[in-house]
Amino acid sequence: MKVLVTGGAGYIGSHTTLSLLEGGHEVVVLDNLMNSSAESLRRVEQLTGRSVDFRKVDLLDASAVDAVFAEGGFEAVIHFAGLKAVGESVAKPLMYYTNNVAGTLNLLHSMEAAGVRRLVFSSSATVYGASEEVPLVEKAPLDATNPYGRTKEQIEDILADLGEADSRWSIALLRYFNPVGAHESGLIGEDPSGTPNNLLPFVAQVAVGRRDMVRVFGNDYPTPDGTGVRDYIHVMDLAAGHLAALGYIVGRPGVYRWNLGTGRGSSVLEVIEAFGKAAGHPVPYEFAPRRPGDAAVSYADPSAALADLGWSAHRNLAQMCEDHWRWQSRNPQGYAAVTEAAGAVAE
Image 1 (cartoon, rainbow, N blue to C red):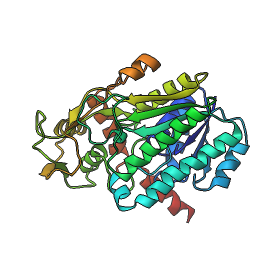
Image 2 (image 1 turned 30 degrees about the vertical axis):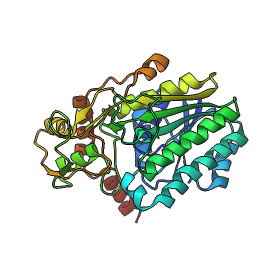
Image 3 (image 1 turned 135 degrees about the vertical axis):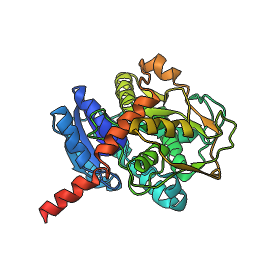
């Protein structure tokens, strides 16, 4: 199958691109490289022995997106492209609504014009808001609490309306929880721009010496150790979920929703301890006040994905931390060191 992957140079996108290539698919990656690096795709090529057809295109450039589809042959799209920092979305909501929602609308118009009506959308558990009704099921009410989450919720609404209006569309909405880990080779992994917004990449940067201390927000939650509990899922399990969803929607018109998580929660302190074991030394941390809006516990009910897709997460927290540490320890500055070195040679 010829698949267009938007945001395919990013963290989850690059791992899914790798899995698609290993699965025998033809892949075209569209990415503006705003928060990603083309080095990830060079390493995907190294791992798979296959070339990645890359286009540096921004979804806000509608004519450029049209031009990609005009080449023809696409059978499906996996849509990752979008801004994803919660704090930044609160500070810059217009940027998030423009980039995420308007960019998606441009993509959908181009797909419609080209007759491509299979889409796997990268949604998020943030659409559930701060609900403490766990485990979270797909039928739970949506109540995103920040602009980033609301862009995901709005895009889900748009796609639901599209599927209702035109039965030729086949759409999968994948609500995943907390992606972590890296490919077992250590060649590709998470390389956040600026300060990491999520726990595990921050822990990794502390462990490798880029940052001094992990701040643990709240130690008085009604949980076994007082810290927040979340559902962490290995990025390669997540990539497998995208391939399973893509296979499912072929020949099945409609709009489908699946949680992708392990169905198990790990506390902040459990994550820090597990990462310390993977790194071979303790990771320093300090407690800080709770953050407004944080739920005490959040984890998925992934039973629908197992029933419909035959998919489940296989890697445990120890494996997540080991793979993430392998990536971070071998690439302490992420892809930046390679990119900077290449720039110095070019000069």
